[in-house]
Length: 326
Ligand SMILES: *[C@@H]1O[C@H](CO)[C@@H](O)[C@H](O)[C@H]1NC(C)=O
Image 1 (cartoon, helix red, strand yellow):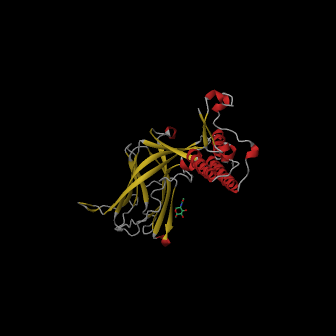
Image 2: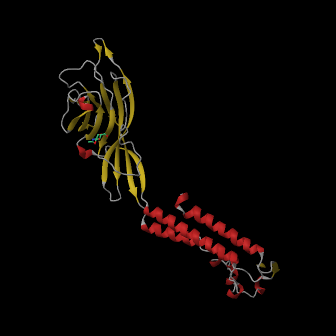
């Protein structure tokens, strides 16, 4: 049986039972150095300060991780908002700077056989450009089946010769308004669409895919909204009787997939345990094992050992507990 003493770096080979140590203490791998054989050093102080700063950093990053709410998304196939009676609220705000308000109207059509021309409930037409233009602001509901709504002159009593359909869309949104900063969604994907430079006589088609979206906050309250993607085209249409009256079409269809965002917060006990372990892990090395205390005969080797151990502890603590790396 060979025992290895640190102070003299000499290997002594002793018969197992002739050791002065009692049998159970031979299994101690963290052997103690008597207190009067240790002394503080500048290197030790430096490493201790570094470790304290590092512990503080770990603790603060745990704390910010605990305070921040994370948002988890999931997808599933379902209609999340069954209680709505199969309707979706639409809010539209569009300006046509070169079309008189008397001519502007909204028509709604869908596959359930709905065909409404000149929808006026909850809508407002405001003259722009001294009456040359018009802003249409409307709220209406659509059924959850494919269909379209369009802004055109179809509902006007007399059709103008050449209606100018250039426009700016300020807002087109479906469902409840979600005011959440952490979700970068497409709730108003067409907001800001500017077609003022387009051919005045062109029709515009916006083809929308509406994606049901549920947002559940920390309190478990659910809000239902919709996001959408858009493809668009612009064309001047003719039939055998001549040019077709242009319109701004919004053709929509619903996605069967629902997106759900859920706010989550780390449970308090997890914060306590991770904070405790990150601080505990990076405790100054000298306190845990005697190998880092300065031996009676100071040597280069032990100092190097100290540095090495501190780096190790820091890297391990970072990899295991800091939320930055998870
Ligand atoms: C519609 O958009 C215009 C231009 O951005 C804005 O001034 C107006 O307040 C909007 N209307 C509504 C009801 O949001």
